[in-house]
Image (cartoon, rainbow, N blue to C red; front, side, top):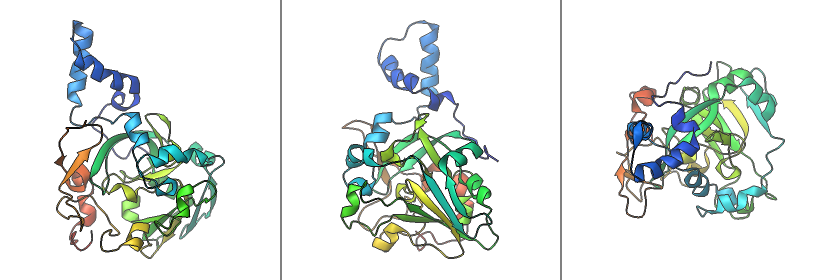
Length: 301
């Protein structure tokens, strides 16, 4: 049941990294001949949403198990062993068990998804993910009708993760979604970026991506998925419930207690690039607003 969600962009916008990176050079020089004019036209057509570079995406991110600095994950995550890898799926499912990563991949249809990514710290990127819909993985385990939430857990390996020596959070990192959020067609389990295997610092080999929520909801290096009828605890909510709610939907109208969420700073825009307005639900309002119909989004932030 893959391909539930249709992107308006074309495949070549995300698959041909060399073309994308070279495009800026082409645009910066003199255009001559029909071939280059055609490329320029394609380039202008995607100006509204274009991927960050592979270097932006893999060199500037958060993964506190490998350090709290933005460059720490890229520097330290090479110690993480990702083969073999299993994901335990348990709780209210018909077929609980330890599912091998290779067996999961044989059963899934991998798609390319170009998504906006908005960090709660008010920086943003556009990322070309490769992955499959979480709904298909949950179908593999067989979700029981009594389940209402999905809980996730990241790997906890002190010998491989130097950051967990420090009590920045209550390890292991945990997250959660309502079941209807988890099975929404936009919610994917990512396995790659730019058509390459997902790097360790970005959550190899398997991570959640929920594009309408702040980035910390998209838990990395998932080792356990539990179906439950109770709202599961989440790491940042446990650490500071006043600042980090369970939902954590991108919402420019609800500020973080210590800073505004009305605007964001696109990474890769250059030293003098200005901030841009943040979009409701990170630009996916048409797709997901109905999930929260009637809810007070100030109280349920």
